[in-house]
Amino acid sequence: MASVSVSSGLNKTLQQHYMSLPQRGLCQVTYVWVDGSGEELCNKTRTLDREPQGLENILEWNVFAPTCEKDQSKSVMYLIPVRIFSDPFTLDLNKLVLCEALQYNRLPAETNPRSDFNKVKERVPWFGIEQEYTPLGINGRPYGWPSNGFPAPQGPYDCSVGADKAYGRNIVECHYKACLYAGVKICGTNAETMPSQCEFQVGLCEGIEMGDHLWMSRFLLHRVSEDFGVVALLDHKPMTGNWNGSGCHTNVSTKDMRAEGGLRYIQQAIEKLSARHVEHIKVYHPHNGQDNIRRLTGLHKTSSIHDFSASVANRGASVRIPRQVGQQGRGYFEDRRHSANCDPYAVTATIAPTCFLDEE
Image (tube, rainbow, N blue to C red; front, top):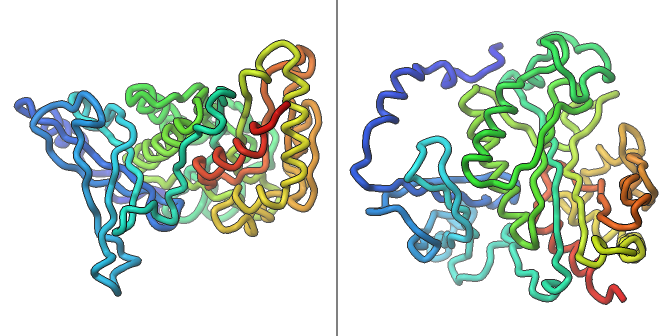
């Protein structure tokens, strides 16, 4: 069975002829939103008569909601533009616009937990998320793995270089460039522990923009992977056995944590996380947290899903304080419990009230 999709073999030179045709001042705007599963992304495109200068220049749109097809009066979802990005696939003047989805009654859809951070705004919350993923061939195997067998055991793949260790670098680098062009706040990337597993980092982002930028970075990842004929898998345990899972580690700080003596605010926040461990686990994976047990085993650089732990420089803890933060006495902490397919809106909106309210 082929490892890449048939569409990736289409004539790119012929495509480039059409992509280079002038648009006569018109602008393509691609609407992007999270679907009813809370994990997948959808998109559709419309033409505007000029380049939008802000969200006020982009109209609301609507889309059919398949989950409501039994009741046609409730079958329309409204797409509300919330953030504009440049389009790295069709180039300027064209745009990608991230949308939140509202139900027929204009209330947020169940899979739309996007909410404001007004209650903690004075804390100046910063987030950075480390998104792990696995490029997957359409044969169901991680890209570059033997079709009938396994690669050499984990060990030499983390931050690796070389054809025998680094798989799919083109995907990683093209995704990085696409994010930079789009205006996504991507800040780094590296190969991960399992062969073909990758990671990119998004941030620093303040408040709700963390969710906006991570969702758009995921959309760009799926689109770039599509061009290469592979699937970007965000499953938290892509391969069973002695292989690392994929997480979405979240780095968190407030202005008090970043200031002199901030370590005590970090420690207070961690105590609050400890008290709400079970509650947070339910949010850190899309399906009420239960399936995250496949990754949070206490092995492969994870903590146990059943217990909360925190320490300095320990990648096997639920929450890690980086070594330099412990030494400097200020900075941020890293919550390592999130699954690769978590919803960053739900994650940040859960962390904020737990950690930032009543810090004193």
